[in-house]
Amino acid sequence: MKTLSKNAILGYPAGIITGITYGLNPLFAIPLINNGAAIESILFFRYAFAVVILGVFLWLRKQSFRLSLRQAGVLLALGVFYTASSTLLFESYNYIASGLATTLVFLYPALVAIIMVFLGVVPSWPVWLAIAATFGGVIIMTQGGGSGAIDPVGVLLSVGSAMAYSFFIVVVNRSKTISGISNSLLTFYALMVGAVFFLQKIITSGIPVTAGIEGESAWLNLIGLAILPTIVSTASLAIATRNIGATKASVLGVFEPITAILVGSLMFGEPLTASIATGIAIAIAAVTFMICLTKR
Image 1: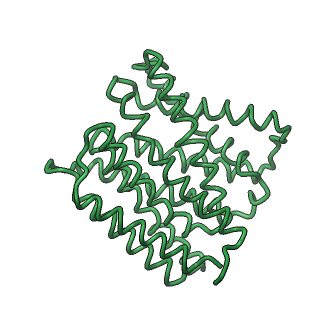
Image 2: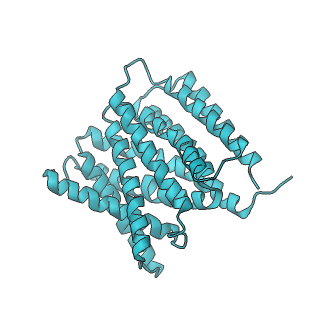
Image 3: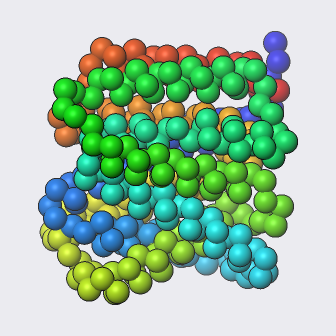
């Protein structure tokens, strides 16, 4: 029996952690949105807190923050992709259920695989089969979202979020310019772009920076957003992508919609039906199949 390689031992758990932590977005974001907090304010504090926490961590480790001009350009692009993905996802919550919105973002494994094919990297048949099965599972999950009409604006926003996330993953995997940059430093600069962007957006729109953010629970939710779906998710995504490749890492993101749907059901009373349970079972079986057959 073949044993897992060192890259697989690091990459597969990191990919699972990425999916689970990113799927926690609704847990922290929905209470803030329901209490009237502006999307721009939520995302600014999410990124700003994450940058401060990561900055202190890197400083304590005495890691250099120096970058070349080319590295800065690539990290700027990564920051734009990640910021766009977060913005579109949070905006979609205003139109469709949080579980469905985060589920639709799971289109990104198929998008990543297609982009990689154009770059000359063709996934093996177990990976293609896992993509098809997980995508099928996600489609089945969306059939359990209740009887209400689905707003197409929310769907388009979620799909746009998936596209931006796909480009983020591919650049992390393929760019030789940033291959020597640590996962923590990569995450730090990508998130800094988001913090600057949302601060600029708040200033130009005239929105009070703490609009709708009141009470201890609101600030705790912002800190939760900064740590789990932001720092942990982004850093573990970089680890997974660099160790097992962009396509496999993206397939493991199926734990994102699973987590989001469970959070929506358990915390916010969104439906959890037999079709959703079936879709989750199919997705987990597909991921297990992929890991077992591609563990070299």
